Length: 348
Image (cartoon, rainbow, N blue to C red; front, side, top):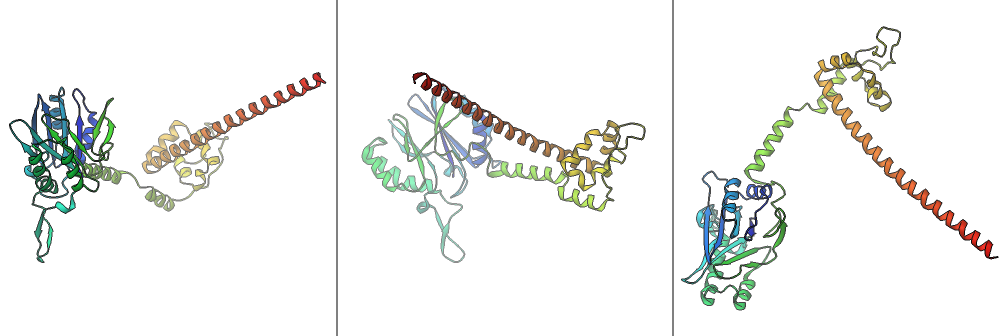
């Protein structure tokens, strides 16, 4: 599924949102700029195979004082060619020009070819369903209406052929655009704009850029020490019992055992024992740092447990505030009842 964006005069679009939309629909793009009753049309199928978000942003900003219509294509039917790149010319005369953009799939209008078994199948190198739909339905009707996209009969007939979750756009050089079916609105940076769908603005969910990011994350994850491996390695180490601090030796506050051995003791991962690590000196932490695997695991464990403690602290604060408000409410109610009782006694 592709995406279509309508930008009124003077309106720019948040680049992060536009960038996401381009990365999700990378095969080609088409831009229509309405300038003084004429349509300036740009169709691009990049040789690299990917549309450049910076190129699209520059094209939109170049004519920001005019109304613009952008189509970003993700190829679902037909070849990735200029012939299948939106918009499509559906009517042209000396007085009027009309082009068509489409978002969705007209399954009944996919180009067909014969497979190896002789049976018809979708033609990946043929015309797209959008082109076929326009040539078979929109252009013949516009010829009859002389390109009048506001003609009620023309719109009624096109709606008869329209079906499914498809959105369309007819752009006329001298009439208001016709947004076909259920269009949406998004905030593009302080201004609401019309879009065919809202699926592709908040993040990258498919395409070459998605694959690159996923590969980078996997490569980074592969470099991280695995928690499972750390547990396995610690089990193989000699386990020393967790002891109390030895205050009889010089250097009060130092642990009587190596901090590395202590951190390899399972008992240290109970909170009542974990707090003992607060007594580690700088020299002992330096000793801990020599065992990178243990050090990293301990840092991860401490930060995670601190996060859990903080959440528990917040929960207790909320409970305390609720309890305090309840006590205040009860006290106010009791005071009110006492005053009412006192007033009744006076009345008697």
